[in-house]
Amino acid sequence: MKRKKLVFKSKYARDILLRRKVATIRLLSNVNVGDVVDVIAGHLKVGTAVVEGVAVKKLRDLDEIDALMDGYRSKDDLLRDLRKIYGNKIRDDTEVKIVYFRLL
Image (cartoon, rainbow, N blue to C red; front, side, top):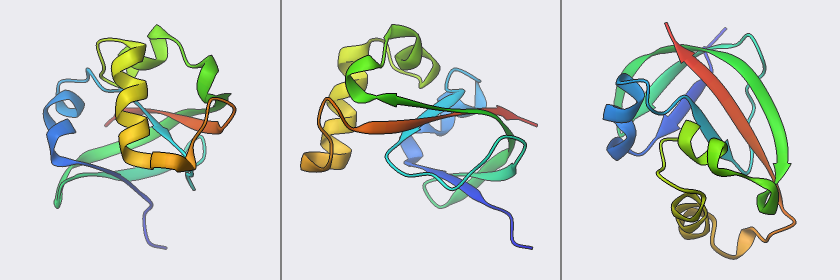
């Protein structure tokens, strides 16, 4: 069976490798707790991780801890990037998935 992937922009590789980014917030995700996934940044595999948790929150309920775990300095920075990535696909009441992972 082909291994699932968590794919990131290349700019996140350093934070992932330094374990400053241990979560990712996605509109859609097919990973489940316990999955072992390839971690791809840009076009390079930067590691393998295990999914330690998956939570669902509304965009408006994300907090500073969610932002820090996703490698951002603040909730505002996180929301700015999510709105840039997803555009008009997300609103304050949109449910997002938070995927918590640990590099192996």
